[in-house]
Length: 623
Ligand code: SF4
Image 1 (tube, helix red, strand yellow):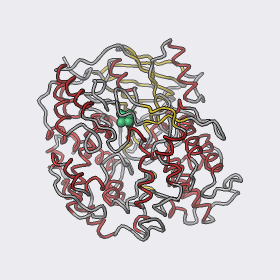
Image 2 (cartoon, protein in one colour):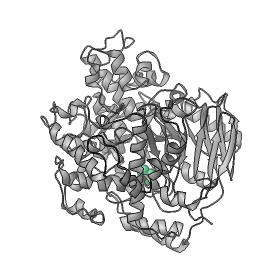
Image 3 (spheres, rainbow, N blue to C red):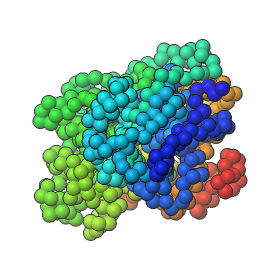
Image 4 (spheres, rainbow, N blue to C red):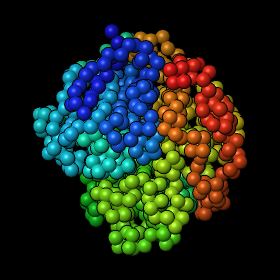
């Protein structure tokens, strides 16, 4: 009997509207654990290379892990994965909330969806069963109405629902999937994949509780986690993730005006402290988590913002704040609500608007192109209007909704110089010129730039930070601007550790170096839940599998080493802020990439994993 997981994968074919249940052997779970790694197993086996990401052949996977739904804090996260319509490569996005524990309680570890329904539908998964239901009456509706209607129809207010908004239905390549109206699988455009399948929502509910191998140890380890949590661990609970806004601005690493500057005069007005003192009405949370870092904000005037849609996280604050030159927290909260209502990724949406603002400033776009909007940096009304236009795919918003590369090409006149992206996806709001390891992370990530795939350089820059990382064999602090081989080595270890957190669905704020969960604590917990005799070595090998499988996925799609790069802007001096004049050295960066390939056992010129390395990871089926 499996412990911690159900041993059941729900398979849905929307072409024929048929449902089946797969019962994989234990080795599938121990080798891939869950999340994006398990999803990659299905994508690499069953999705033909060069498939249309918005065609019925694309495969959409929702996956928890072998420990999701067990009691420890921070186990709320899950991955959605498919071929990305935003990048054309591997698409993966994680979210928290309550959805994945509920799927586990409903009897399934993951859902693998193929095909396209010939009418709008939603999936209802409950107590070991699933059915496909008509969603004609829900198509076009916003998430709140959709959620209310499904709960009313099924007669249960505790049903958890992951769904798309109008942007996903209209196949916007920056559309997200959202659960509980505020927890987003934000990046890589997976909302559009769901829309392309005519799948409006997946509703889940179950009464089962997960059996674990050693209940006493699971309780003890969960309690230890809570007892060792000290608030603030970097004050994330009290002030939310946007607590860093002012600090980043002072350090010169707050992306401002489309990554031209690193400091923003209005940083304090939009940061976590101001939010807590003004519009915050509640600290929100995820399944079983005592950190409570989520924000719920309310605004009456001049915009109506409802706390049911949550509140802006740091990325959203930077997206619609410093990136657009806006120091109005109420307006940023409105933009956040609109993104959650339309089902838009706040990072890509804010970045697209900032990009369009720079195009407007440089004369690439005029009022004729913007439907009369004065799209200058700092224009709050124009920023809000643009979010709606992208969500509705109207006018300029329609062009932007196709993604940043498409828009830059369409605008012409040098617009590509202002499109700050890697592999077609806009860069999140962590300035690589002030923490160069982050730049390496952006360049090599298979999903396009993702700030959640590794801890950032400041954590390894001090003795205190490095002490927390000793179990990984990291002993020496390194400067944030360093990008030599020692930095690359540490980056690889931490990238793999982060891959493990994402694969297991552990929230990074609850684990080292940010939170109380230790490296060996994770191992003890996996052992206690599953009953497996595992180790940190074994678990990190799973994470290494993730890195390699994602790489192989992209190579099959035609990506090459040339795609592992950064936008030119990061090789040019910053125009303002504390780090004015700082840039990344191109040659040093190229050497770092080569070292990265070499250390991973990849061909140093092509970035292709060598056969021996794949065999060492038990991935010879990919050669
Ligand atoms: S730390 Fe925050 S994001 Fe992470 S699980 Fe807890 S409440 Fe959710």
